[in-house]
Length: 522
Image (tube, rainbow, N blue to C red; front, side):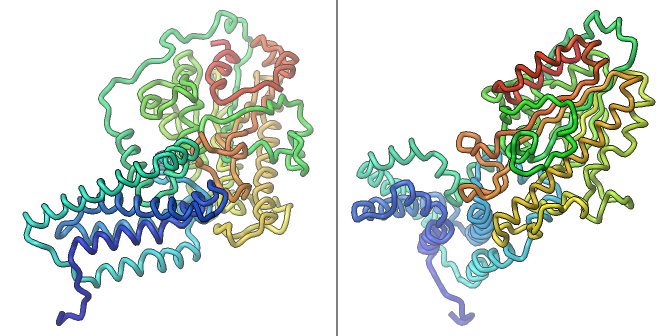
């Protein structure tokens, strides 16, 4: 053509795009498929070729729906750019793109986004996303008349589905085994994984006119409260991304918890989270739904633990230094302390967790009602672990000072992460000191429970958010610590020795709702 652009019929462009997506953007998928078969033998070649053809056929059937003027080119650009970004995180961090991961993306805050941006992602997306997108803009796509193009699209879609059906029938046993024994593979497949997961997430967040379901309408302080001579203060610290395996008091090889080791704590050492991301775990742990029953849309239509405690007459306050309470604190007092400010505990991007202690003493001392205070930490949120701690807490060195973890050794990553646990230990130590000082005037108690754990390179996985069915222990095994002042245990009738005897049992986030109500005698 006179404009110098390459000319291609729309149906051939759609086929070429399908081949590009299946071949270029799915090498983690192919690597895992080959691993499930123990490598490539002569007998596997036919199956792998059939799988490639199957995926091309199905992708082509889908893209045929978009094969229309004014639709195809923008859709193709969006597909290659989004597939490039998804591929970077799948390959770099070992994540899977399921609905909960889409939820994490949708509900993340600007600070977390900045942590994920690094030169590596820009170079990767430039080569695998922007360059193909630029080539797509330079291609002249030739369309038939509207009716003929529509008929051709339907024919191509039908052909793709027929080819896929023939392949599935011919290799039925192989595909049945693969789908039944390796269900996680579908979350690696691009672009279907993020398209389907986004659709599921949007559907789950669709407006629902159902009235808020009341939970515990008859919640009240038990008669024994009338005998309490003093106000009570219960502080629940929600940890962020803290895994039990790296806590010194649980037997970790490093002394990451020197302050907590000095305290008379009750440590529950076999506790598992409800989810592998904050967006799931936070609503789940405060809900009366168990992990197996939990659906976020359902949980948001119901009152939660904080509503029940508030109805019983306590003042409930949520103080946040993370990415929000994920709708858990919608009906109670809320303080956002995470925004950067002119303060020694903040920098230009975020604040350290000690900001949660600022003004806490006044809140406790001036309250005329019994208090339940929730402190939501930034904790050990990655990948920029080094940003979570002030300089004096970088005790384990060298540290990974790069948000692109592939540029760091395992030792550097673990060092940076362990420093965040060390800082959490210091933070909890300071909080305990504050509560101890007031134990002569008030009944005080502290609970610490992390939302989920973290992978630090084990099995080539990093960060968190792996679908629960496939999640490793590192992402689900979380610390749960309890401290009670003597007067608190006495006034609320809690047998501390009995708690210690039970601390070795198997527990989970499911236990928080009922345990805290029982602890508060509600």
